[in-house]
Figure 1 (cartoon, rainbow, N blue to C red):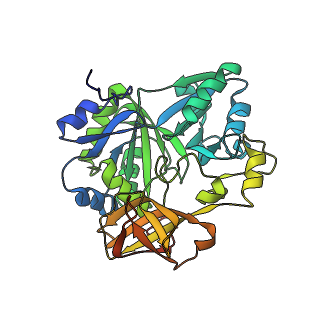
Figure 2: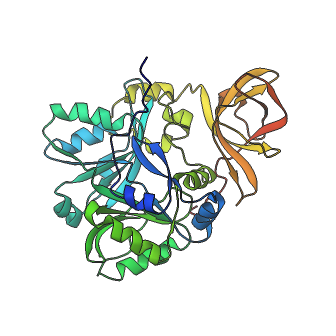
Figure 3: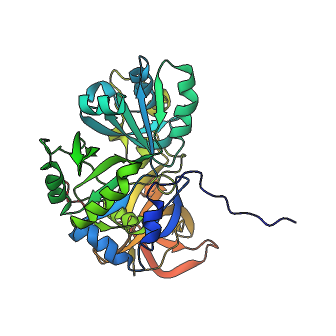
Length: 375
């Protein structure tokens, strides 16, 4: 019998050798090796996000540029936001649905401003997570009059934390470019390189992303470190995004939930907007089966994920994401629970995979916004 081989990711970050040289331990996300951590001190990396500025290689997102006569109509039907309301220079967070109204991916859609449009030769940029959005777009665009470009060589660097704004101002001081507001973007010169800079984050703290071509990315990464950004892996980033109550496809979103069940109805524009799965969404929003909630775990326990949540011995929910937050001094989680039990303060027993109850371990529903400086 032949030995089983471990599947290798088909996508490679242009910064892979840089991370390896820094001693990073990697994990596979979105079919790409990404830094999980740069040392064993995960809390130190997380603390950098909360007290300084964290720098994370987010190149694993799928980056798709679109243009052509059908580009707007196609993209507007693909996502739940009405893109006619997104003016050039702005971006919006949205989701993609299948025909039965379930979320198959989340995304940020950029309506590129004139400078970015000329540089990238495209009108729209959609950045997708780890769901089925990229595959769906790839199959559908063969039927449309549009130009599509999957840019694997475009590096995305995420900088976030209380000192991120100062770094952003310092970068933009090198060229006559305004500081963008949240979910806005600008083209700028950074160290002599053309860079798309967007103002958004994934931690509950202020932040921005830099999109730069692969040949320049290593120098930009090093320059950001010199400016005070601390390299941060996905494990520390995961703690920060759970603290902020932000969802992650593959954990909190699995492809089986509706926007209503995920608390994402704010991403759906129904008026004068016909999107894929709209009829199913309108029907589903009246009868959600679950609700996505925050959880406090006490006493602090080591979880593994997917623990069952029980009331009187009956399973009424499941933990989707969890983190031990030293910053908040709490063990926190994001969970799916049956709607009838989704009440603030409701307590559940926690069980392992074999349904053995963890003695004295209680999960209590609370707001999933454990930490957010952007409110």
